[in-house]
Each structure stands twice: as structure tokens, then as C-alpha cells.
Image (cartoon, rainbow, N blue to C red; front, side, top):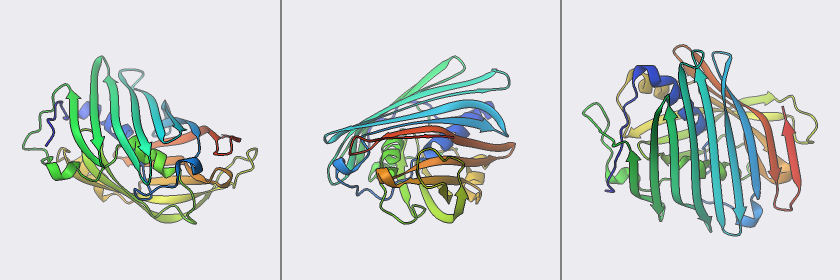
Length: 287
């Protein structure tokens, strides 16, 4: 098993950060490892989202993807402020990989800051497995954690690669998908199931004005702390994601994500999405 360095315990006051992390990862639901040829995927995607907690605007999330030839690069940034700025969270991630018969991540980095404390996760992948993990500061798993074993690092992708794989279209209903994800500390599974449709109020792009509403099932597998909050999320039937089809780019994009908590619902809602499709045509959506 690769050496794992870092710390994974979240104090009670930092729980909103874990919820936001789950929201970000919730968009990372892929339709299986097989993907279309690189030239059939959107060359560039730029999506900006607003984050709200209990109906109050608390931050933003940005996603950027770029595909050139058989290589891809994925970036994200998020900023969150709670309690009039008393709690601050910021993060940035970078994934690099190659697209052949499968999307294969090579490296994933996730840097984040809680108040003045800076932390990071680094993962290297080879052949669909996580082969090296480095976290700063050092992870200290305890008896309160579900042990992370070598088998949990096999057959996984990073969250950002999963976001890119979501951009593949070609399905009548995208709400039948699952992902095996390792984020540098935890291994978990996310599964989608159909729940209905939702009208989307956006008319200028020429794309369909509806989204598929999918229920999200979250299954923690290893590396997580045994807590009531994790158990509550695993039992929840109220986690949702709305996926909007964009036929002219042959993709679907996340429009809204809802994650209930004991004190209110965290939501991530699209403000704008810009796409350069495989024919070098630009598609712009604003909400």
C-alpha cells in the first residue's frame, strides 16, 4: 500500500467544509470507465456555480476542463465564508491524464485552506489504481476510522476525472450512473437513480429547457471517520443533482446539487456554463 501522509479528522466546527467537499464531489458521477474517443468530447468546458447554505449565499465553485489530443487537464476552485467570515474555506485542484479507450488520470492534487491552516492531498495513478498518496499534514487514522486498505486504492478515479467523464452524452436518461472515487484520504461510492425532471429557466442558448433530477446515494467505504454525520449522509434519500442535457455538444452538465444537513440544505447552482464543442463551436448558458 502506498505511504499515506496527512490528517483526516474534522472538528465539529469544520463540518460545513466537509459538506461543501461532498457537494463538489457530488458532480463527479461518471457513466462507467469507458468513454468516447477524445475527439467526440467537448474540447473545453468552463462552469461557474454559486454555493448557498440554508438559503444564504456563502461562496462559489468553478470548474474548467481542457482536452488536447489524447491529454486532458481539469481544474477547480472554491471559496466559502460562513458566520460573517469567521469560518473561511478555500480550495483548488488540478488533475492531468490521458484519454484512450478509458479516461486515465495520472495525477491529482487538492490544496485547501481552513482559516489560516493550509492542507493538501496528492495522488498518483497508474493503470486505474492509486499508486502513491501524499497528504500534508500527516494523516493520523485512529480506531474511530474505517481502515483504508490496499484493495481500496484499486479501480478508482479522482473526483475531477469523474467530473469530466460526466460530460459524455449519448444516454436518454443520465441518472443511472455510479463512481468509485478516491480523493487522497477516503474511498467512497456515489450512485445515481432517476427521480424526475425539472424546468430550467434559461432561453438564450437554444438548448433544452429541462434537467434530469437524479437521487444521489453516498456509500462511504474506507478512510472516513465513523460519525453520525457520515451515517446520516449515507442514509439520506434527499441528496439530489439536476443534470441538463446539451445535445449540440453531446454532453450533460450539472445545473444544481442539493445536500441536506442537520441545519439546512447546501446547494450549488449554475450561474454560467461555456462550452467549446468538438466542432469548435461555442455554446453559452447563463442563468
